[in-house]
Amino acid sequence: MAFLHLLFQVFVSVMSLFLLYALWKVVVSFWISPNRVYRRIRRSGLGGPPPSFPLGNIDEIKRDKRSSSPGYSGISHDIHSSVFPYFSRWTKSYSKGDVFIYWLGTEPFLYVADPEFLRTMSAGVLGKSWGKPSVFKQDRKPMFGNGLVMTEGDEWVRHRHVISPAFSPPNLKAMASLMGESTTKMLDKWSKLVSSGMPEINVESDISHAAGEIIAKTSFGISFECGLKVFDKLTEMQVTLFQSNRYVGVPYNKLMCPIQSLKAKIK
Image (cartoon, rainbow, N blue to C red; front, side, top):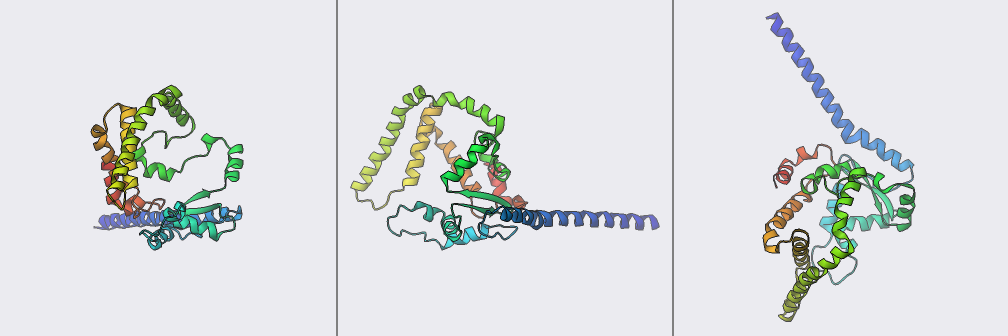
């Protein structure tokens, strides 16, 4: 009996140590580590919206999206303010509005809208050494895999060399007629809709379908109808991956949104 009691005490002690370790890891990941990074960034002179860890600026982004008018508000060429109201507001709120840091969860991201700044940075840093956020590599892997978009360094160079012949001038010239055919068909459709008095045209959907048709014909040599199922699946996966209720950048976010994460893998 004494042995069982001792065994139980050992088990409780081990579990307590494990829970304390897990709690410490969460505290470090959610608050301590990102706050250290935030202070270093501030000391370097880069400003930006103050984050609220562990969500960073995600709540602020969602709030700006909700407050921006979803309906038609007249013709405007200021697409940036309509699509990214938070970026538009932040660029006006900080002295160095063209360059600032914002946070997705505990991950800092550099916003650059200053060509001269980008040119200066690129002059002293090799393009393949910039690095791509690991948070996006993991989050977008179901859609992009280990292709050109996600690879870097020597692996990126290898992928780039593989696809380069497909975009040579002779090949692009041969594809031009197919591109023109699909584009003309889309414009003819719009002309008929306008002539019939249609008040609205779903430009995004039609351009996506035209692009899909061009890719199906030029890259795979198949008709758009044959490739439609593939593009529909990719669209579903894209919607799942980019849903606004997913906390990209927040540690252990896959545990916070298990259904969306599972859907992305299944698709």
